[in-house]
Length: 184
Image (cartoon, rainbow, N blue to C red; front, side, top):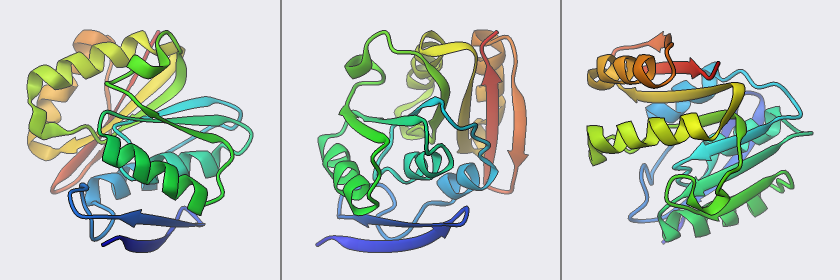
């Protein structure tokens, strides 16, 4: 059974359906909320929401970037179908949803901004691969923003410093940290 959630996020009403088997099916998870609350987006840019799930992070980015474009990428077909449904529910014309293993569906496309609440249960090797792929798919001066559980903060800081040669902690809370790196 689908579950319809309506949230006011950054001044925009965002509607999204969830269903059993989908991450955080009863509400917006705390990590995504933190990323959304701190998100700074310029207009007229290309953004990727990597591991988009139901699409909420990407939808807020699309609302903050009305003359730009957002690609929602997820490896899970169930999430991709749900994100497409939710994009239509929110009448977002500047969003495209792709079934994609990391960036496989968009090949050599590069982004101004990559946002992610990465699936941390897949382990450190997956996070390393994701960071390297984010680097490849960022434009020069592009940024990657990840929200991670607090226990992974030090690992992701080291990872970003290794891959991007920089890392900034934008938020440190009791349970989550928000980190940013820039491609120079």
